[in-house]
Structure formats: C-alpha cells, structure tokens
Image 1 (cartoon, rainbow, N blue to C red):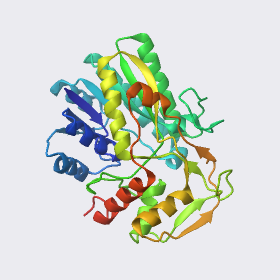
Image 2: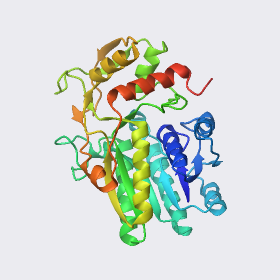
Image 3: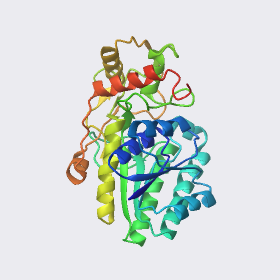
Length: 337
C-alpha cells in the first residue's frame, strides 16, 4: 500500500509521514523545498528507521509529476503541497491562486489518468471566514476573507465537482484549525523560512532569544481577555487524523468534509501564559493594532470527525507548548544546523 504525500517535507506533511510509516504504509514524497527543508526528510528516516522514495518536484511541473506516478504504484494521495501565508496571499494573490489551484488541477488530472481516485486534501478553517457562531460545524456558512482561504474553498468546490462527475472517487476534505507543537522526539517541528507568520514559532523564537518580544495584534476583541481566541491542535494529533481519513477513503467512495481541531478555544494570552508555565521561559509581549480581517474567536465542533472517523485530539495545550519548546531548544536555528 503506497501513499503519495505532496508537500511531505513541510510541517504537517513531515509529521504525517512519520505516522504513515509507523502504521506500516509505504510512502512516496514529493516536495519542492520552497517552504521546507531536505533535512526534515532525513529526520523522518531517523525517527522511523524506515526509508521511502522522494522526488524533488513542483506540482506545476506536469512532466515531473507524471514521472512520479509512472514509476510508483500509488494507491492514494495525501495533498499538503501549497502556499499558506495569509498576509502574503493578500500581497500576491495571483501567485497563490496559480500555485494552489493550478497545482491541484494538475495533480487531479494525473491521478485520473492513472486511475488513482483516493484523495485526502489539506483544507483550512480559513474557509469559514468570520463565523456567525462558535463552535464551527462543517455545515457553517463559508466565506473566506483572504486569497489563501479562497484557494482552499475553490479547491474544495473543484473536488466536489470531480466527485459529482465520477462517483468512483473517494475524497476527504480536512479543515485544519491551528496546528502547533512538534514531534515528541524534538527532531522535527515548524521551521519558518523568514519572520514567522504563526504565533507559536514566533513565541519559540522569542524564547530562544532570536526576537525581542511577541507582538499581539489587538487587545479589544470580544473575548475573555481581549485577545483573539483560536483552536490550537497538536500537529501529531492532526497527523493521526489523516491516518483515520485514509482508512475511510481507502474503504469507501464519496466525498466528505471534517473539522480537525480540539473543540477548545484559547486566547493569545492563554497560549503565552501556558508556554511560560510549562517551559519556565519568560515571553515578553506588547500590543499593536489589529490586523485587517482578524476575527474575535474561532474554534471547532469536532463531533463529526469523532463519530465518522473515530478520531479525537488527545494532546492538551501543555503538551503543545512543551513539545514546541523542545523542538526549538534542540534546534535553535531550525533545520539549519
């Protein structure tokens, strides 16, 4: 049983590769290293003691991608590859639409050609935009407020149309909330190329002395402490969610969507305080103005994933903070040692 993992050297992809290998699957990884590092792949092998096939290729390169399919007997695809920074997507929207949407179209065309119709797609809670109520269910209204979120929703709609055209497809759309944490080994974790776009790697870089303080965008949200509330999920729990979705996809046909989160909302200050308590690192912070499009609170209703996939997040906020710090402490410069 061979699973193609696009973007398998990335943050969520690398953790999912470990879970797949540990569960006995063979994997083939495709990555262009635009937002990931080759070292992550070496660490996957170190942790699992298992080897796998790797192709350095871009999904926009149809010839290179076709080579992957012609040289391997692939049973299913887990599709992580894509650009993912919200603020960057606002600055260069055409690049995001071309990369994320066109790349997925090329992938699906080649899958269809090789009669591989089992797909798990890495979507996002960004598709919900400004939720009218929380917790957010899979039936909540959709209305992304940035180009990144719109690329995810467009791809979801494309995949729905694909299934309508051919009911032999089996597709799982996984809407992630806010992945943080790292593998318990401390060997792999989130390693942003530049200034982190996400909160936890920024906190990590303050803790390790790379940055002076955390800038909190706004303190007047309609939340218990005035800072934005989000659903943070441990990346290993998220990776295990993909295995549950894979089991379902391999055994059925159809298309379905699932929220992957904890169902609990924590504020920015909750996260900083928990990090300080668990790591004994002092995290200085200051407040700055709100960013356009930031919402008060967003967290998941995970009932559907619990009931249909048999999946539930197991790790708590302390685990997420502890594992994040362990990764950063062991790798002060990320993978660039």
